[in-house]
Length: 303
Image (cartoon, rainbow, N blue to C red; front, side, top):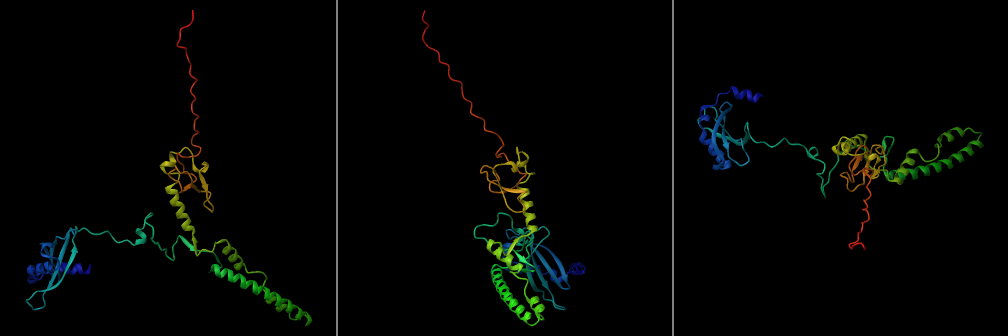
């Protein structure tokens, strides 16, 4: 805004404004004579600093202009060249505003061999199995279980010896030795880690509640009760024999279609979705059996 205000108040220097040939020669040197068009105008950038504008004839640069800035030193008569650039005009054809790749990505863009990294703070994911505030790794869980079991066994033996010694000494040391003994058994964290490691549940990250809800909304929009197919269906998927139930918290709302003739075959569908391929949509009628033919004799009746 400050530069625009200065530009509007400054009167173009006459000698700089008259240096059209110098400005054109600079533009033609930069782009070629055939790419420089008519002289459009002059703007005053500062005291004794003027920019000449020429039409740009480069293919694909409709509305752009060659801007050649010239200047003159104080008390000098010679006009010198400052810079030559290509700038968009008011009606120039511009590229759309740049958008980061992760915002341009759309479903189906991922192809064979492509890698799609996820951010560390992706809202769709959250840390995997964790006990307390510390994430539990599979190797750490197994090691923790072994160490805890060894410590519990050693502590149990030490507690027995300490109790015997304290009893022989009149029971004065029974309290501290008993307090030093662990509560016994493997710690809860190691128990959970060992079971999770055995079941293959120790993934580094799992689907968050936000990711679960966004997935459900997406599936509902594509194969839900408000789609035209479901509106015209004779029944919903909840009563279809081709519906495969899924596990987890979404099993009461979604399933997988297993009808090869359905448009949703192999997709997660809402239980309220439906199509014309419903297993109970219609009963195939039995084929009509024609009546037995009536045969007539071709001969004459005897008299």
